[in-house]
Amino acid sequence: MKVSEIINNNKLNLSIEVFPPKTDSAFESVKTATEKIASLSPAFMSVTYGAGGGTSKYTLDICKNITERYGVATIAHLTCVSSTKETVQQKIREIKEAGIENIMALRGDIPADMLDADRSKWQYHHAIDLIRELKESGGDFCIGGACYPEIHPESANKKEDILHLKEKVEAGAEFLTTQMFFDNNLLYNFLYRIREAGINVPIVPGIMPITNAKQVERAIKLSGSHVPQRFKALVDRFGDDPDAMMQAGIAYATDQIIDLYANGISTIHVYSMNKPIVAEKIMSNLSDIIGK
Ligand code: FAD
Image (cartoon, rainbow, N blue to C red; front, side, top):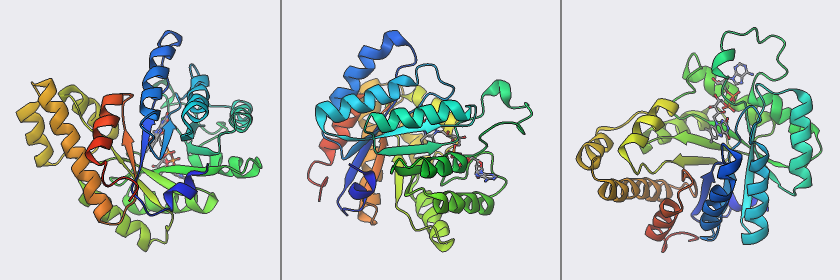
């Protein structure tokens, strides 16, 4: 099923993100974790893509398994920046053959050892190049793109970031999933700015339930997200007690989700970090709201 059909149903839909294994030996344990999450029947799931190949084949294996065994629609992520046209076109064919209808089209991060490389001969520069290629492929995919309420770290300013986002939508992105954020007001401000700029596709906010203190540092380093005082206080108070931190982190994320839904946003993406317990607790906290 296409995610665009699910997003527009006006009910609270939770989508859950998982990532594929980084090594072949980890495949079975990741598969089991993703199956446990799928058995909770989220509205849909997305499976990330390890940029640069490697274990990237597992993205499709996990998507296929989830849909075939649990009937849950999936989004396969695909990055392009350090790939050749040949590799990307092969991936597109594989996605089509696997019957996956939804693709999150991403540029991917520039690999650290290529930051200073001459990029003029690269075949892909931005996610928009991949989106155009997907449209031309005749695959009839529902295409999503990424967006950044707190601005993409490489953008010179918010105006420029939103301008490129608009181009991405005009090229064919039917919905946009956000980078994680811990303060809903940042999302509301972002929504105001993009709607004013004429970007009208559904925005799917990304919520990361923080369940241990170390994860906070990692998540913030990766995303550059602002950490509000309310959240800092929670980590200071419970960071040394894993059970309490898990409970407090899930409560904080649940609170963010309820606030977003109350303010009219019906599809919300949860970064599960492959932890079935996180998906289970969030969904249980919202059991009387999901689907309504
Ligand atoms: P782009 O849309 O290309 O934007 C990147 C930067 O370039 C921005 O600053 C933008 O303003 C600018 N820009 C865009 N278009 C143009 C243009 N035409 N001219 C000039 N500048 C332009 N990474 C992975 O490796 N695998 C994943 O599975 C993955 N999943 C993700 C899911 C979500 C929801 C998010 C938010 C991120 C994900 N990422 C993933 C990380 C992502 O690949 C990085 O954030 C990457 O740095 C940017 O990707 P993008 O698709 O947003 O790039």
